[in-house]
Length: 299
Image (cartoon, rainbow, N blue to C red; front, side, top):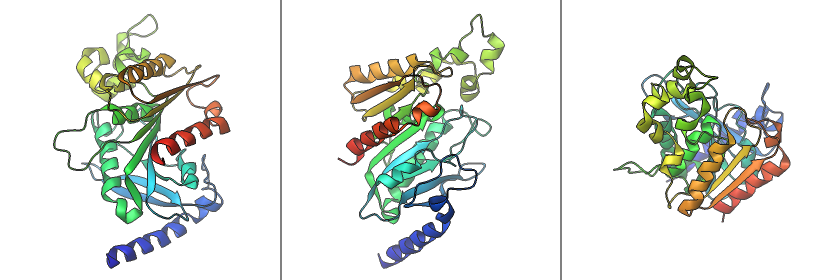
């Protein structure tokens, strides 16, 4: 016990040194400079698959007492790009949450289901390390945008694997404009505007290893819409009504399935918003996200 407490003291001391530039002046080139009062431990290895370690950055309030509820941030990028850096959710740490921003395997490293395995392993890691980092293992939420929204929606709906010894379930999900049904995403459908060759090169095809329509069962496995059940956690889904990348109908259908199953679901259609952008960075949007995680993770 004394050794663990001493290690935590050393870690928290190191956090202050690591986070000085980011917490006070913002990291050079950062799109999301952190407000004062936040510390961060960067590049914590949560998993070591075949090629390279997978890391996360852990943000937390400088002054906190007791275990902190956690929000897992999963970045977008079409499953082929993006990283844990410049975490758009880091501001939640100033509101009394810990935020874990993760890297996961991208398409140049692995196909489905590696991505959801990584998200699950990140949740398990947070639970096993909860005492060390003063986290609440019973209050973990997930938030992601685009491809990250796709992954957190599955994280919130998919049944836990048999024999799971540490739970990978989350207690709340904030899905920002994620694809909910790969079978009906326009890039995966042959049409007058999209040839079979283009469909075969889509991100969805690269994710699944084949044109999506050729592997319908695998596509359903990789779609949150097809995992919805009555025991799913509360969801907040936010989607712009002008999104050119992921049709609004993807979120409308997921919200309706959750509602039909009896899940606690809030759908916010953001007027004038595209696929991300300034309309989703307003104080009103931020306040809605904060109220959702306060309600679900800090009752």
